[in-house]
Image 1 (cartoon, rainbow, N blue to C red):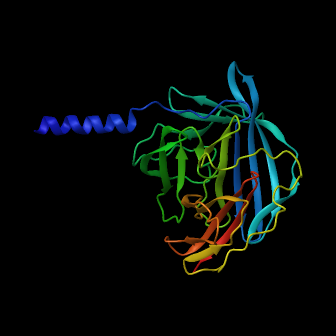
Image 2 (image 1 turned 30 degrees about the vertical axis):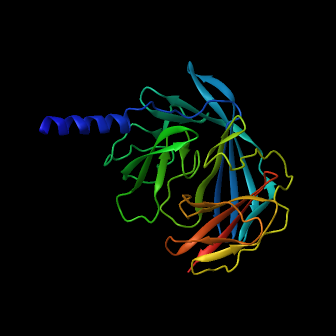
Image 3 (image 1 turned 30 degrees about the horizontal axis):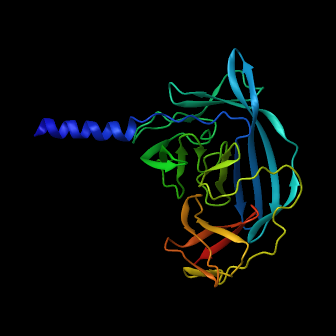
Length: 298
């Protein structure tokens, strides 16, 4: 009986951790869009793979970074300004060791960006995105199916009391973005808005629009949809809108709380069953545009 139990545990470990590792994509045109926001500020950072380059006989993917300033307030919308593109940022996969490395021209060696070769209870080595903290521990590991592939998600936190979790996602980066730093602060909030490969959205799901923003053309000038009541005690309504395609609710850590299809003939009622605090409502329209609004449960 003891041998049978050991064998079953071995099989469980094999199923959970033995599947193929998924590295970050290297396809030209892959896009990550990350949001940094609080009540008076909204900035979106767009990362796009624009090819590859050779550094010390090693192939790196070149990343173009675009910073997009949006209108602040209760909703992140419109494009106020777009910064000049920066293309001197690179990353490379080390698939054998399940790691990703980062580099800029002023670095004389590679810097660890992600380490996916970890177990529960492990302490992370210092990386580019965790450089401000010394002790970050893997609290748990789960496996989610994203874009038809099973991916490990490493949930980490500081060993001291920290109100936010930072999740590393195989083949995607993190739930905060590609290069967004680990932070223990609730505000401003960071979260990965979306990721797409060859025009197909991979994260958070295939229904989310992840169009590449290339100009000051305002993709969010349509009338703002009002959320009522806001603040709320846990239930709010989104008015009927025939152009609305999908509704998603995210918490302050950028984690998806719920996804709701809009009602066609009546307002859509959203229930926040999680704890008190600020949430982000992402409204996706049939023309591919997106509005992100804040709602407060108190």
